[in-house]
Length: 137
Image: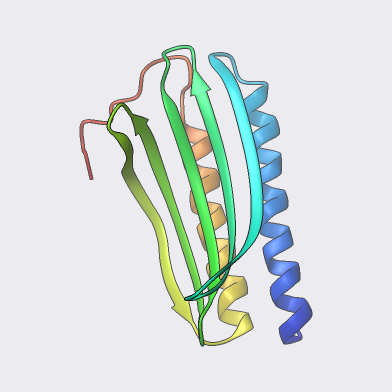
């Protein structure tokens, strides 16, 4: 079992480091023209949030964003999604996680699962050809 304060911070740091590793892998991928990773700790009226993203552009002028958001508002929340940038704005392509949990152990598990799902999506992404986004989910 992880101590609550340090455990939450450690779990968030591990998740971010995994996204950093994905960004390095994507930078080396043929067909990827730009990669941007960021993580910010933000304060909102609804509570504190850590927002982590991995944006890419491809030779096909396709822009995608893998998004991970961790929040606290009486319970922990973990949200992970994939967005496509279009002329009209961002469109949600896939939801990987939308989890609420009351304890740090739940946060650790939720983060690990969300980042595993993002990693699987990144691993199967083929930047060398346009992606079929017709599902419009």
